[in-house]
Image 1: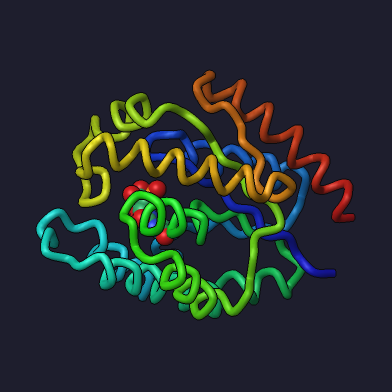
Image 2: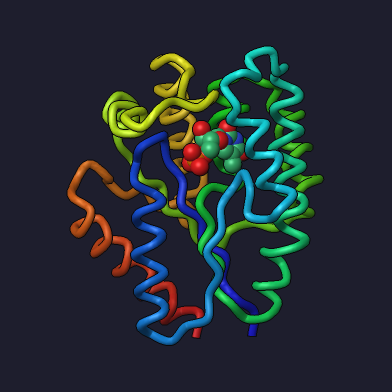
Length: 208
Ligand code: TMP
């Protein structure tokens, strides 16, 4: 049986990483084989690309270069990790995927939407998440949380940029309400996890 591809998305500081960790614990307790991964990164090569993308000293990076580096990390990730896991019947929990490219490089950075779409098609070869959780919080709340431990190149963008990222994500969810579920992430960690587990349990019932 084919696995399930589940992604978590949202603005900086929305709590994705914590929630993925807790979802992974939930699947482990149920004895369900799964892989936890992230973008950019998720492979040795992708992690090197991630460093370049987030390095604050790379302020001269052109938007096109940025788009192609996210695509390069993704191509490696899809081929090396995600597709094999799905074909092996596992659940893949992925911290960000192409919706981040649409929201950050497309909506917020303003790169030509056709170019963004093409880069995604090349990198994914048509692979799409079965379910995407959009953890929604106001950008200012997320940025306040995220920048406590230092700021990377993307986090260092101004608040207007991050507000556009949020609007970008919400627009995507509006266009694909069956795949992208918007979950209010302004609540506490446990309450948010409970909401996600309810949705995931329902998805698991349909999958089996
Ligand atoms: P993270 O901080 O959630 O690990 O994500 C790394 C940064 O990369 C974050 O600022 C969002 C950004 N990003 C993009 O701009 N485009 C993408 O396609 C992905 C996957 C992430």
